[in-house]
Length: 188
Image: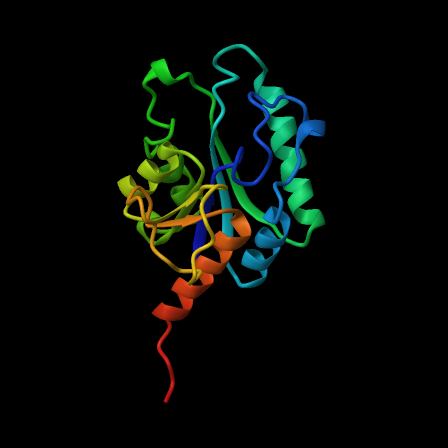
């Protein structure tokens, strides 16, 4: 069973800049289906997200918890499950060990959930997500809505920042399945 580390805002749900109200959660197009497919194919789904709105005083830890609880419920409603949600509440200037691209959240998740960070796939829409993936030795997929759909769903990223580019999470799920298929031994 593989682990997929997912950014939240701009990857799974619409980025609403410091989302503090669970009612504002809305899956991006294709994200719900991608989560369902990944879950049904045996991948463990873990959210790893920077949420500096807490450190900035824009919303409370309790509001963040409510948003995360609603996200977990939305994922269950579409037939999938999140193995965990890990958030950094600090501001960028706090220089903490958990704010992406630092690896603290992944280390915490790996310790609690029992997985090898280097054996994961990291999916996100920002350079910090890609840098996190590189820091742990994972395969990286950057969500870039303007990216043209590759001729092959497992086409490498042309710009070299991530291992692969995908216009949305559904296309990223296809890349993961192609990679998984390529690593499986074929029977004669």
